[in-house]
Amino acid sequence: MPIRLAVSLFLLSLLSPFTHAANWHTVDQHTTIIEPVKEARYLLPNQALIHGQKCAALIDSHGDFVALELLIAQIRSKLTVPLCYIVVTNLDPKQLSGIVLLKSAFPESTIYAAKDVSSSARQLNGIIKDEVDHKLIGFKQSVLLSEQRIAKAPESEQLMWSAKLQQAKQRLSRWQSMSMPNIEQITKVTSIDLGDYPLLLSPTHGFKGPALHVYNQSNQALFGGHTMNLLPYVAQANSSMWQQTLYTLEKDSQINWILPGFGKPYKRAQLHLPLRFLSLLNTPEKQLQIATLRQDYQQNGISAEQFDAYFEQAEKQKKHASF
Image 1 (cartoon, helix red, strand yellow):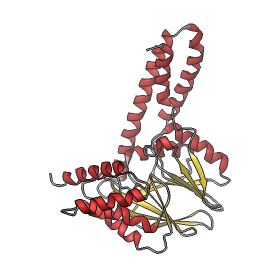
Image 2: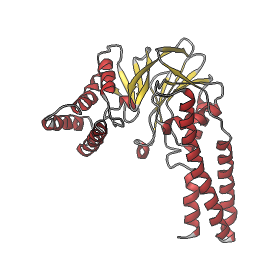
Image 3: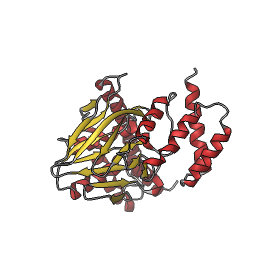
Image 4: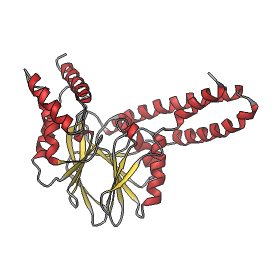
């Protein structure tokens, strides 16, 4: 492999192919949806930035540190009020790892997450720390390997690569100095006020268990992350409580539209799709219903191949419950 290509491949592990392409969509004067680039739409989740007269809230995080650093810079350039709150809609370790970087950038912010009754806050911090440490070990190895490649590169190229390597080292050093944040794990509906602009945080059950959804009464929007994905990615053996969550929300006439973790915003009426998806997991002799549901998803822009892959994944998770 040519030296130039080898060095670039290692240094790119400290960069992100999606860093410069996130799309910011203004919903109204208070609400902005941050949509990942198309190539990352199943890797990075949607986020939302909501602000009132006194402060703002960022809904959801992810594990791409480089993309988050750009997001932080954009938030600082766009907001005229402090970022007071960071809300995470699920306890997936990869998404949680990003709150360490966000808290480091906005130290006065309060982080909210659902309470996992099966573990303590200390254990949750341990899970986050393990995820961050694993990520940083990979970055450090990339830097060391890049250093070795640069030493073998032609002298005419070493100066350019050395400057890039120095930037990568500075970034890594900054990330290694971050401390674990305090997380407010809530077990009941909690209201946060952004300055004459309240949001309701509601603990629930969904994607991977304990979850939060955020309700904005002003525009009747529900922000629920992966729990609200139109096509559910089932990563747990028992999804019955997740199904109950969707059933309750489907009946809530105060909800107008929903922002999922993956995909475009959609109307509450479309919740019948993920509800049918989850209910079919527990239905015997379901091939005809699956075929009908597959067609309904196709009418909502989701291919048969993607539907089949997600349903197969869900059935694998369900089988785990029997062991």
